Image (tube, rainbow, N blue to C red; front, side, top):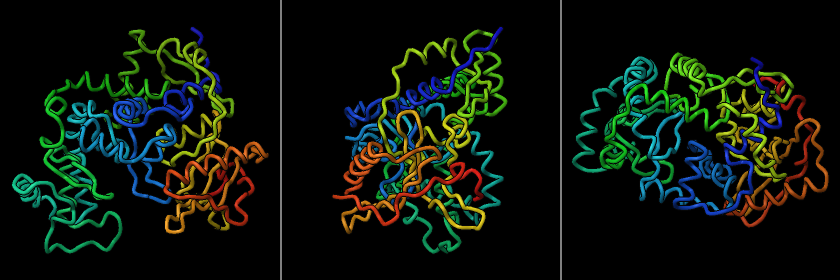
Length: 411
């Protein structure tokens, strides 16, 4: 049989629709509507960098520009419709997914032992019972509340004191949960005090878990190779994902499709039957310009972003001299179904200004009057979201394209 081709324009349209980036960023952004949006896009990655606003807030703002951070806090910490754990990184997830993480807790308990004994200082395992008993008796704690008398690390982000490592271990293996965040500091409590029983107690059979992990990943993405489905939640093994795809093809619940990349090359992928027709039935992506978080779910897989959009995106890129071209936190700019550049902006709240240091267009993108007006309107909206009352453009902010979008650089 001839394998159908999903053309690049249709692949982009489908992918952006699945990620809620193919519609105007308007509408309600709190309560049940916000919970439904997070369920639709799968997860919201949490990151500490706050040059404009934290990643999880920017991800939601780019889809609903009435969004404000207190709405997410209320859903997670009061209503318990969301919870925080690990996908490929720390993420905020729909609470309905919690039963599936029991399989991950068990897997991580074995997998992390070998790694953590190499990576972290000794002594953390001896703190497990002490910390659990303390939390049971006295209530939630942060890493600053435990480890009295332990030497605090000086070696960087992962140089934790043993009790901090123990807290993370107990969280990663499901014995503790994040009850809230004070600022950006995690506050840990016993899982049974945080996760509602309706989601904490049900058990999911291993076969049903694999079916959920792969099937939901496919539905979130629209199409993908087995490795992409496995990596989406990072909840099953590569072999389990491959076996799921084989079984789906045999049963007729999956079909193969050749997805056209931005460079015209085809990549064999899996999809639901009729995916090309489904993509054709979607409305075109409006020519809206929006600034995205570097950790947006649509960009998490950098290789996929390059294949699908021709957008080579690594957070830091250096030219061979070496000279830094892009800073650590440079924001991708999406216009319609095309990534047209990256912008370096930072909120200086003490001065009330969002300062734009640079904008690098992608090769072939011209900064005409209309596009500059759309970019200015979006940066003004971003300034308001960041708590600033104006945008300041620094001298020389309009830069030349980097050849290959930085692909030919090293970094």
